[in-house]
Structure formats: C-alpha cells, structure tokens
Image (cartoon, rainbow over the protein chains, first blue to last red):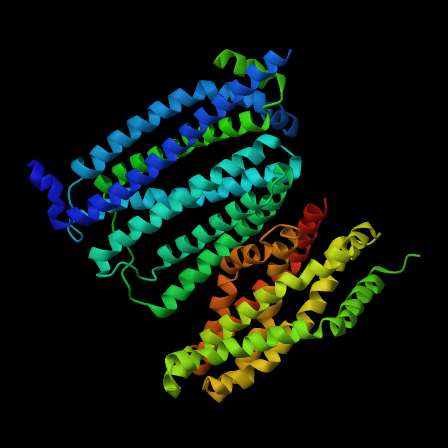
Length: 56
Length: 246
Length: 227
C-alpha cells in the first residue's frame, strides 16, 4: 500500500480525514484550554502570595 | 464508607494523589491514541460493505459511548456532592460537564460526516444521532445553570438537581427516540447495527475507547486541580504551594 | 394552629385559584399565545387541507408545549417576591405536599384550558374528527407532565438573572418523550395504521412517574433557591 492509497481511503478520504480532523481539533482544544487555565491560575496565585508577603 | 469518601474527598489530599497519577494517565492516553490510530487507520482491513468509510466508527462510537458515560459520571458526582456535601464531588461534576459536552459534539459531527457517504445526506433523524442531540442539549443546560449562579455552593446544588433529573430522563428519552424512529423508518440502515462485527474492527474500537476514557480521566484531573486551587486559594496549603511555585 | 395535611393542601390549592383572578390576564395570555402560534402555521405552509392535517398533531402539541413553557416563569415568581414561599418552607407541613397542591392548581389554570381549547384549533388545522378525542385525552395526560417537570427548573432559577430563557433551555430537552408520545398518539388516531392506545398508555405511565418524583425534586429545588 502506498501513501497516496492510504490518504485516499478507497475514495472516502475526504469523509474519513475530516472526521478524524474534527476529533483531533476537539481533543486539542480540550487539552490546551485547561493547561492555559492552569498557567493563569498558578500565575495569579504566585502574584497574590508575593503581595501577601510584602504586606507582612 | 462516607467517612472514607470525606477523607479522600478532601481537596488537599486529592490534589496530592492526582499529582502523582496525572503523568501516568497522560502517558497511557498518548500510547493508546497512537496505537488506536495505527490499528484503526492502517491495520484493520476495509469493510466489504462500507469500504474505508467505516473507519469513522473508531472516532464516532467511542465519543458516543463516552458522552453517555460522562453524563452518568456527572450525575453520580453531582448526587454525591448534593447528598453528602462532598466538595470534591461538586468540583468533579462541574469539570466533567465541558468534557462530556465536547464528546457529544464530536459524536454528532463525526456521525453526520459518516452519514454523508452512507445515506447520501449530512443529517438523518437516525435514533442514535437524535438522542445524542438531546443529550447535547442536556449538557448545555447543565453548564448554563453552573454559569449563571455565582455562589459555588448554590451553583453545585442547583446543577446537581438538574443532573439528577436529567439522568432519570435519559433512558426515557433514549427509548422514546428509538421507538419514534422505528415507527417512522421501519427498514432503515443504522450505522453500527451490522449483522456481524469482525474482530479486526473490535480491537481498534476497544483501543480507541480506552484512549478516550483515559483522555477523559487525564483532563478531568487537570481541570479539577485548577478548580481546587481557585476555590481553596485562601487556605494555608495552597499558599505554601504557591510559595514553592515562585 | 395546625390542621390536617389535606386541609393545608386544599388551602394552598384554593388560594392559588383565588389568586388567579388577580393574574387573569397572564393566564389568558398563555391561551392566546397557544391560539396565535397554531394560527401562524397555515399562514406559513399554505391552506392546503391535506398538508395541514398531516402536520396538525405535531403543530398542536408543539404549541401546547411552548405555551406551558411560557407559563412556567410565573409559577413561583410572585410567591417568591412576596415571601409566601418562605412561609411555605417554614410551615409544619411537608413542602412536597404543598408544592403538589400548587402545581395541581397551576395545571387547572393552564393545562386544562389548553386541552379543552385544542379541538377548536384542531378544526382550523383540518385534523380529522375521529382524532379529536385522542387529542384532548393526550393533552389531558400530557400537560400535567409538562407542568410537573417544568416546575423543577422554574424553582431552580428563582432569583437567577436570565432565568426565563434558562428555564426553556433546561426544560425543552426533558419534554422530548412527552412530545413524541403525545403527537404520535394523535397522528395514530388520525391515520389508521396504529392504535393510539399504546402511545396513550406510555404517556400515562410517564405521568405516574412524574407525579411520584417531580414534586419531591421541585421541593428540593425550592430549598436550594431559598437557601
């Protein structure tokens, strides 16, 4: 089986790859969004503790 | 049992344990996805009826399964949080909702893409797609309640009632939609009710389903850890942790 | 002073009916809404009688469902702002029973008139005469379910901004089985192929389930909202 045969998916390439691409998109969004949020939360926490320690 | 739940349900403990579990479940997720994609897209031979189009099944069916499992999990977490006042359960329920909704959306879109070569049209009121659509609305309603109530405790209780009422209704909705479907299309082709499912289809399907299950677990942990830090930010242990981040 | 539980339930029921006079325009508006929505369909799809008869069961049921959804917003809001809901919560009687009485009164003022009015609109929609009885019966069985299920989101969203739209968002997916059984029953009676009994008994079974659980869930929802 050649690469072009693999991509063609027996003529259904457009359907198969768009379904997999959409799934990959959803999985990526679901991975990236919480990680970005994690960074924001941690940054916020660090800022708040620093401010708290200056006040002491 | 309830005492046990409260002990492990303490967000601080959960934060520590989940920190150790997280790298492992992330690695397992990646391995399962890679091998599942290899098996599904390359190793499994084309179907004699549907050709290569049936490979959409390996993303559609796991997402459809996960959308229902996540809703069950959502209702269980919500019920535990409501009945026994377990804060961690409230957090897990809240973090399950967006994941479950995205599984549902993915099942809908991939199902409709699969439908195009099989039925010749993007949308057919197929029983599975229809009940998936109603499930999507249930997730949206749950998240809307969560978003519209500020106070986290009241939001958790109100959305828990929504989830419990929803989960009692899910089987009724499911069967009513199937019944409605058989009334109107007695002899239609459904996507996955083939006479025989071959072992070469089953193996990639199981691997991909496990991949999505571990993906759910991993992302649930990440989301729950974020939520815990936000809710407990005035506690001493979170402050100590924040000092370590510096 | 503490009377019997049934006495308290009757008192709540009668109070609701008496308060009706104060809000009679609101209740009438819901019926008018039902009439207008159904009237829009012939204007949209054309006056062809066969076509109208074909969509009549669905149109009548969807219109009744939307009218009930619209009425849910007023279900608790007056009692909530006046504080009589707090009184119900503090009373020695179980809240579930009082909620049940209140919902019964609400149905008498909305669902019952909708069901009784429906044959008139069915004539407009060219529904065959033989399906009239089934239409009224299906609405008599179905509208109490709509009230019972709808009361839960209505109770949960008290005091929440944008509560009205939120109620519709929460309640419409839960209404799918009622809509399917109700509209199918009328369609079956209008056509010849199936008997309507199967659909009606499923509707009745669902009603029993809703009667058993919805007042309880609604009372819990009220406790969350008034917390």
